[in-house]
Length: 549
Image (cartoon, rainbow, N blue to C red; front, top):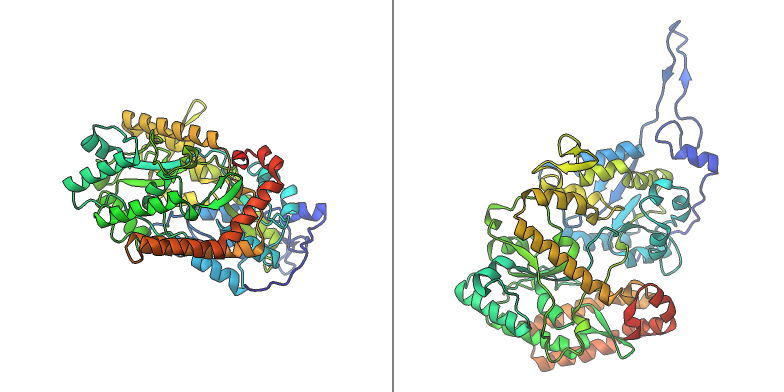
């Protein structure tokens, strides 16, 4: 990790700060940037105004899986241009593909050469860089910014505070997000092969999978999307683990201790089940190598039937289905009524309630020569004009106003897939602020029964999440060593799990891997346990129910 020269960021005086936050009319030094001087060589000439060119800043950001369409320049499009206009900054963007983001992000942090602004959903690595002098504390800027305060509350800032006690990150809010997570299923296939009934047990779901596999041998019933090298099991690769209450890379509080799910008997049985499905051809043979593009193609064209995901990914929208998706209907499955005998308690197979912020955030580099202008970019990201542009579009083109309500125009706004990329600029607002406009658009075009099923599923998942409460890991502060080792530990889990499912190691050898994991990484979960025991009252106040499990 690169070392950064630490420095203190001293703000301007109150008068100079007001001047610096004006888009035009002030220079970096706080003196007038536009002067009126008559041209004496031309008698009677009007005073000429000289304006300084906009400051050029660089922003490194992820597209959060919403790539720019072909032909759209990340640094020159209607939405980023609004941010430029509002901030008075000439902004140049670097936007790696979703698949490559984590690698390029880590390389950038370790290089010691940072752009002016950085957006990421990996705060641990950013905090580590910040503590070494890479990013500045933004609290003084925040305290004087009414624009940002309207979007990000003081409570949200406190939740985003680094373990070292600094406010390096302006977080993404999450207050509009549907709560919960779980297994979504192709409801149209349930209708076709199971009379529209949701199986009530893992065995029942496996029987359904086998029925589909027999009838449609080309279908890839279970697949997987490898989002990054650390957490390589995701989406279609997670339903079985979720039903066993043992998601990879997660933990459980059991008998007053924090335990890695990887070390549980439930995890072992989930791996055995996945191994069986792999051998039967129900689990995609390429589940360990699918990237985002391949996985998406298989969902559309090879009948992947299951996916574990967050509820906010299933907000109904007005987007038209692709021709090959017209017959598809994704719905949110209810909880099992009968859990595997190995599962210690069904509460472990339920989702958590989320925080009012996500892991996304934006940071200002200590290397930036223009931190005040960088802050103006953040304020532009909080502007009401940008909010309306992202979530509703342009009045008359994307929506109309009827009475006091915005009414989407069919096929426009976020229903237009060529506009959807703008959603990744909701760095402060949160992606789920699309809920109102998306639901309004969905009601216009979506089959009513399908729409009603989706809304009922979201309501059900939210109930599960509120019952379980918030997770300890959102609040626990680990040592630098534990934070550094978490990615390595996750990679260990991925490799051992892949090898066991694919039969490259026996289950006895998998057991040895579990023991090795405990010896190498068990201290991480001991730190979680210690933090939990030392802060139980505080955690209860945050809604963390699992401290008493």
